Length: 306
Image (cartoon, helix red, strand yellow):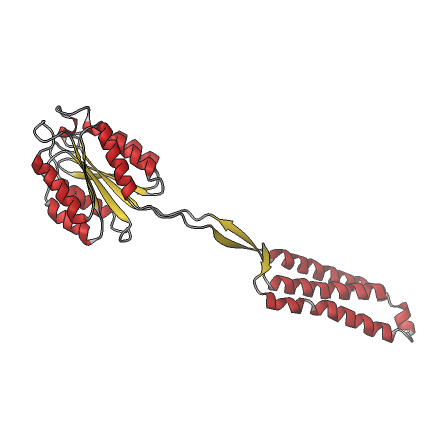
């Protein structure tokens, strides 16, 4: 769709044709008794130069009216910011499991990335200390490659849940309130680090960041996660408004991530945005060309009389 940004200027463009008609009428009246000079004067060149000049004025006013064409472009939807906290303690690959818990966690992260394509995802891994392996990004391919390169016990054999939560919160420092979340995957108790998990959970709650926790492993007493550890993960989720999920095996872990992904609200894609494309350059070019032609016609006329 095309229109003018300043349609009130369009009547001014009509003044040029009106002026040309008026000049033509006046000239015809004067030529009823022409003088010898007017008979010999190359009237066609004069009329053409005048017409070209007036046409240039008309086209210039058309350009000033701001012709433009409407176009529509899709505005990328802005999703949420989610940080995944992966436990790299040695127990994540230890015996007493149905398969390797850490490998299952890596698979679950891939499933989460597939389900939350509009979100920015971040990856923080922790053992005795926490480290950022991927800041928030929509480049899920790179994030998943980094997740695949991780291995248990590379950050120490212990578990620093409080410190890991603090690092994840730092990744969300610029996230709007209500647009961020943390998913914590662990199979052990907090037994390392400087920050108490309860203190970190309170900080997350104060900032409106829910922390959903996934307890990895079998039932208590099977060499897997203990009742005390499960209680800690439940309390973190409760304090922050997140969800607690137990995943006894790899299949359950993937299902847990799917469940959490469904709970996280998605941002509705933004409607297409109208963009106006300016078309005033063409009238400006035509006006310049017409003025040049008018000047050339006047020059020819003067030389004819020289």
